[in-house]
Length: 265
Ligand code: MG
Ligand code: MG
Image (tube, rainbow, N blue to C red):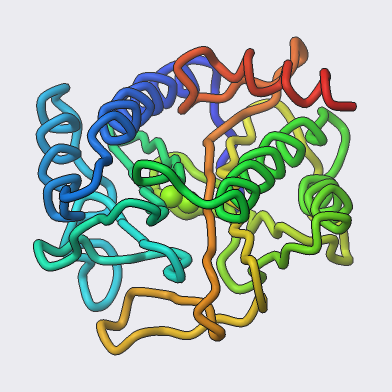
């Protein structure tokens, strides 16, 4: 069932979204050679709890996810478990997914960050994945369909030659982290529910340098590319109003991101 939020409830989701946005900004700044993904996780938990919020991911699912963030390095796509044994090295890329709860309302956002200097192919992967997320959100209009998002992402990504992961999709979000409707990152028929005021969605494309095929590791969480090629993941939580979209997990509400879409088209 789709949960439609009132403006007051969306204002609460904005508070949760800003906790996530500020936490990811701290994590981005902390990424460096020699840092472990467990270090990033500790920083994230301190940031979220320091703002009086609760991590969304800790204890989620079966088996319960053991950490505050997902930290997915290089060929890992999503759901990487932070570990003291995973030391970031110059040239790696790390996807960091973060969720927080404030007064029962969730925010969910992810970034992929280069560790020190990264090769041009990896940088291109990051740039296309982030741009695809913004293109998808920019395609969402009141009266349109949720499927417009995936169609826009697929059409945008096609000329890049990168592949789009299909198994792990975006979602409605509100008083639970994962709600209806699913938000596919490719075109799908039927086109999904109507986009109305009060609908809040997380859009989170994952793009791969090689095959779109995935593999689940023995830890029951970490998803990697089947061919070992690198993958990137970006995510924001957003809503559409009569005055346009608002990105609840972006510190500026999405102003800069949507301006970059407009400038490129
Ligand atoms: Mg997420
Ligand atoms: Mg999500």
